[in-house]
Length: 630
Ligand SMILES: *Cc1c(COP(=O)(O)O)cnc(C)c1O
Image 1: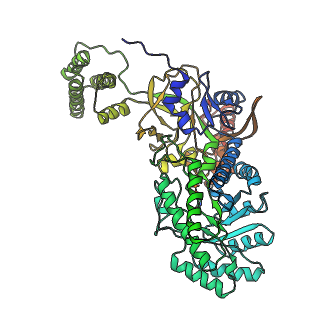
Image 2 (image 1 turned 90 degrees about the vertical axis):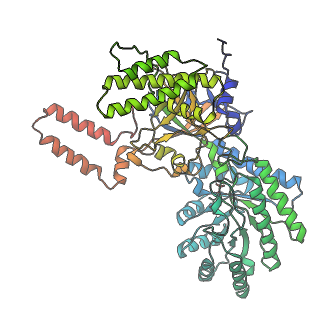
Image 3 (image 1 turned 90 degrees about the horizontal axis):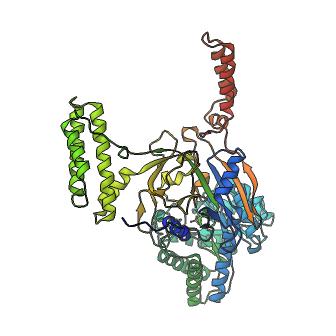
């Protein structure tokens, strides 16, 4: 047999597509450990494996989330610099103003890091609710940074926004529906403040990918063209036309196809021109979100990818807007985008520990008993005879034998021991078939079924519903890579399962350059050695959507910075204790403890020492981590 070539870290980069999706923030190090480079490839680096091992040594339990604020800052800079370059390239006559929509991730470390990194660029924040506006108003932003208020609004929301304006902040209230205009005019008069109004325009153009329906005529938000005309007329009549500061549109998130974006920009830029012609002094043209993250690294219009780069996105927005405005002799507006996903996705890594492997049968050595059932004896013959010449035939025979055995078993005509043998033999034959099929030509779909059937299941200590809700809810894919041994060939194929009692708590779709992979290449686990998997690009949206299914609570998180001297854990936020998660369901932990204590005290079966030990165990559980801890 041909000897396999040595597997190198270059091969690992190919297996796990690291350079394709990492945007320069992660790479495989020479020692086979995955590294983070939060300032890009030239900057300082640290091994994720080392960070996690050190955390474990300190007694921090897994799963853990690693946050890299430097990555957030780097993304803010990259976005603003991309627009600066595009503006220069096309001699665009106005600036770019980014906005971060906090709904994408409202965590304090995230919002504060973005606000700070964005200050030199007057990067602003967008609120979609009163609570979001409340936290935004307290942020230290550049005085010219926009604070946009999107989402449906009641009087209080508008009042808070207008008070922010009165305080001197650049607060713009986006009208999501026509009826909000009357409220804004009334409350502005009450408070004696001139509002800055944004109009959300209902695009005809639709995005592409999962959020296609966020745009288009059936979209939830935005004014139709007749409503825009009514709003303009109403404001003109009140002598308030000058309050229209911004035109806004949002084509949907994760728009995978750049053509859809260009189409939307053309439409909204035309609307800007038309509004100017009606006398509305619109200054800001807000193109919303949609800047996609290339989760699978394929650079295609596939829903987990994007067929364009950040620079191309910025250039197309600038170019199309300029072209439309120049065509009508209107001034170039200040360009605004609300990129959330593209800013936050990269900054956090979920680290899982594999705690067990569930392996389909067929790898154990089998001996044929002299009194084997004839079907079982036939299976032994098949297993012995399989070869490159007959493997498809043999596999199909084995498959039909398996059915026969099941039928015989249901009729009580075959023993459990014989059935077990038949099952093991079937898997043994399937494994040989897969091995031969991989070397030879074989129909791809049958091969896929075999791979799925024969994959190991790695039991990972986490809850998908808490830590990767998007994977469950919208089938979002994330790159997953072992944190070490990347200089060793991964010899097993696996799917991942979590520790919830929910059969949906699994991960069986993995990134690939072509479509989707059903299994992830992993290494044979070594006894006594920990094996960690990193789940990447998890920082957008789902970071704040996790739920407590099975009462698995929020996991611990480390905020990590890297410099030339290595890494530093700036802060460790401990995970939710069982008590907290139980309380959320309406229980009082004191009452629970009391009830259990009463039960224990009245027991005639336990010794006093046992009673003490039980109550101590119960109390410890209430303040413990909700995940497996040994
Ligand atoms: C959610 C949202 C965004 C963020 O979109 P991304 O695709 O994450 O950048 C921007 N604008 C509006 C109005 C939104 O609702």
